[in-house]
Image (cartoon, rainbow, N blue to C red; front, side, top):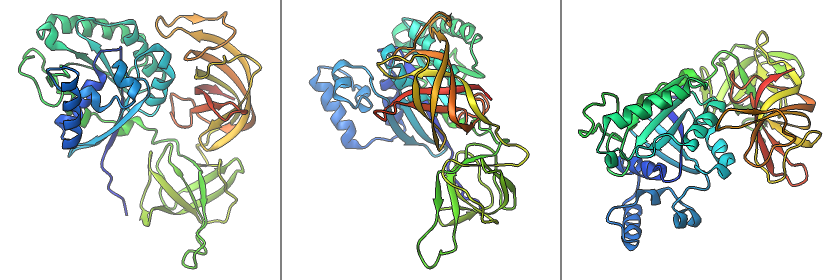
Amino acid sequence: MAVPTMDLLRFATAGSVDDGKSTLIGRLLLDSKSIFEDQLEAVETTSKSRGYDYTDLALLTDGLRSEREQGITIDVAYRYFATPNRKFIIADTPGHVQYTRNMVTGASTADLGLVLVDARQGLTEQSRRHAVILSLLRVPHLVLCVNKMDLVDFSEKVYEEIQQEFTSFATKLSIPDLTVIPISALQGDNVVTRSESTPWYEGPSLLHYLEHVHVASDRDLVDTRLPVQYVVRPKSDEYHDYRGYAGQIAGGVLKPGDDVLVLPSGMTSRIAGIDMFETELDEAYPPMSVTVRLEDDVDVSRGDMICRPQNAPKPAQDIDAMVCWMATAPLRPRQKLAIKHTTRTARTLVKDLQYRLDVNSLHRDMETGELGLNEIGRVQLRTTVPLLCDPYEKNRTTGSFVLIDEGTGVTVGAGMILTAS
């Protein structure tokens, strides 16, 4: 049988300091009735103690003490809420340039990026940088929220100028779907319901757009990819013959009876059944986590890939990728690191650093000899064992990896594969 699941949208918010990201998320949580009364009372009490004549909804998301004291977002804050139409996971990412790595982390799994700009300030260097990063991460949908419209008297002229400037800038980037919405997060205009203050705006409210934006077709449903995370062998008498291969589907559609290929061994078999918890499924697709049973007793272990015989990733050891560096010590050529790609871990050598990308101007610095903290550049790697990967623009799961310091076990970089051979 097929398991009915409520549609899920992951979206990441970005914007300059004081553009109102946390306030907007607080407004969404409040107006969609996704917070408890005691949470709201605590925020109201804190707001009054600070002398505010309004409820500071940003306090609902700025969870760290240092964030509340400074009034900024530092770490990625994840929030969850749901409406009758859809479930949502919000990654509230920081705006400061020194927290670029946190933004990359929060936006890497997002279906949609939400960039806020202050209507009084217009587009800033940070606004452009956030759009560039979302474009690099191949986030398929981008919403530009022109916030604080109440402070410019809901001026259509101000909105149009910002919309035209950003649309012109976005033509240089890989942004397949762009929507611009005028809002006031503090007062709630065009956040959950359409506002009477913007009669000139004919588009949807933000929540209506988030509920109805189509994201299912953004996932790769053609190239079947199941990285094996765990071999399921129950030790009970009832399931003593059970052998399944568990993992999260990264691409394609799996059905019982399908011919499959197991890499890197090259063994072939056929799917005997697909299980999710105690339910047997008729089909499975991204991003479902399932257990696949095969008709033949083939050798499959963690790090292997189940795919189609006629559509398999080519094993590659030479990786050309864009890397966001996340460590204080710089990345340099000839450096040795561990690399984790899907469920497989290997060692890798940094063969070459081709250029550093200025995410504000898109300038490529070809003379650079290293990548510093929060910098992004194009890097060539050589791995000790072949990886079963795809280009990042084709599949964001099999096209991405993380770099790990072997001595400390700390993640020091995140990469997006351009080509592999």
